Length: 472
Image 1 (cartoon, helix red, strand yellow):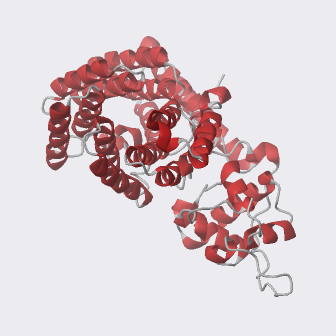
Image 2: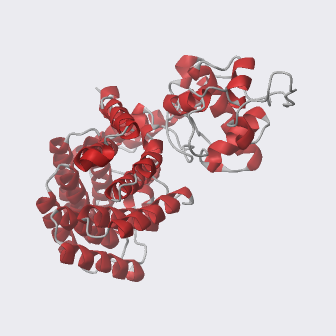
């Protein structure tokens, strides 16, 4: 803890906000109010982790918070962030601070626990996770209406049922990269079950069947990603194979290619780079005339897999192929779903940086590419942002800096990742953090200082409590 308390600490004590839960609720309420007043959805649902709060409160801050966090802190205290994080004035120096801004009444703890945990775009919550009891009842009624519509249209599938399922699937594809998995998993399971039951027992016209199989495939693909995020590659592959069968039944070339991309991703994080490269090759073959962004994803997956295999020529060729695919890309019906079904430019920058970092031929290039990826996510639009990929870019930057012997820079790069709440510590993020830990260990003498030892301890604590502990 800093010897001289910061102004933030002094003001927090004055207002009796020093308990983390109290501070978090006040921070979230201020963020939501500012989002409404400024018509800026980036602030909606913005929260603060316990680790981040403790660093602010203790004065252990090496860099300024993210811009959106700065805006909320300044709205809470009416003082600039630079003053808040600086040592408090002497006792006999008056502190002129406006009274705290009025914010909505804080939620009871049981209601606050139901709110989604996400990043700056966490405005699309779980369908039944409203901020008031009335909103929750309305959302539950909407879900009940969806099930009723599916049954009321009889043994055949009507347009209203298909339309409602399509809207729900699109909501989930958009929300998946932005929200923590526990807020979405129940909805995903329910929608998959509904599509399966309609395909198994309903009388479906050929065109409707194709649409329904596509929706079932997308939902199964998201559940494959969910299984992967919980660290279960076996269940992930099972769901992915189901998604591929659905894509086949829909005769949807782009969906086949998308599922192969997903299988490559699962294999990559499971430590099977050769298999990941093979799936990427299968996907590129299945893509054919596909011009959507899935073709870019496949090439980037190929680059990452070949980088882990140490094949520099294949890695560079795949990166070039991704650039060419981006130039030729034309959004297709999968891209129209948005979210997890599309592959935006910041994600491409992240994959390219990761491939370069793991190839290890040019640490300086890996660092510059990682910095570009991190910057891209900090300025990303709502449709482009994903908390998992942003965390991946930050850990890649840490790895690149460790390779260059810049331990302090690596700590600065990875710290925002270690601030993520348990709800967001999915398998990919914890695996990325473990790579940083392994790199520090491999550096030997250069990483034996107190700062590096502290970072290793933080990573060990971070990876000890992944998202999977919350989902049983």
